[in-house]
Length: 203
Image 1: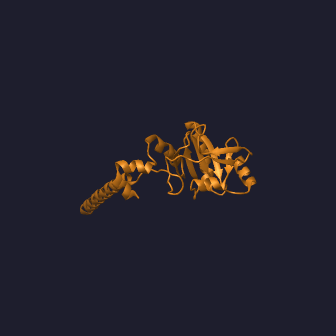
Image 2: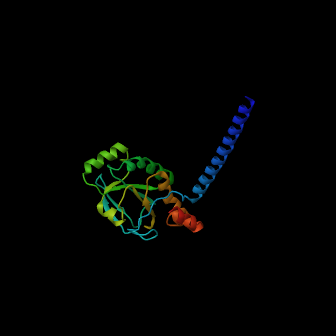
Image 3: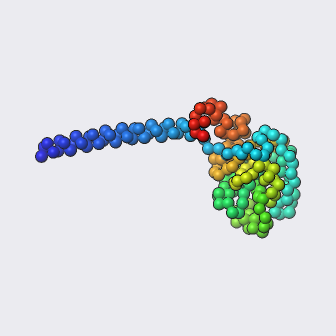
């Protein structure tokens, strides 16, 4: 009986040591992966105007019948968020964009290239964004190379394209502002300056 108890204790300790080694190895791998993963940021397309270029003013009509100029010299830094009633991610991102614009003091404009204005009017009422300009313009989307949604532009008061990209979360939206503050085109470019090898591996 004593021998059996002793043997079971030895097996138990071996199992404990083995599990400890496995947990240590997994923790080490998590640390390595964490170092290799680049911060989340808005994905920039290659089409359309480049960040840092001067934008061309474009007059577009909003749903309420007013005319709005996007691009060129503007009254304040402007965030343009391209959305669609058929895009579930867009719907969840709209309140985030509203909150961010208020916090950062940005002019916020919603844009879409869809037809059926009544559908967009219902969309605006449902999201409670009647106080923000909402424009329907296929030309606007083409001018900035918008191919997927949700897509955001950050325009400076002087008409410079400060940042742009696909945005699926608050972190993506905030990355547009962080790119401007850091003086680089995107967060990915910022990381690449300091850790080019890690960034290339993450890609």
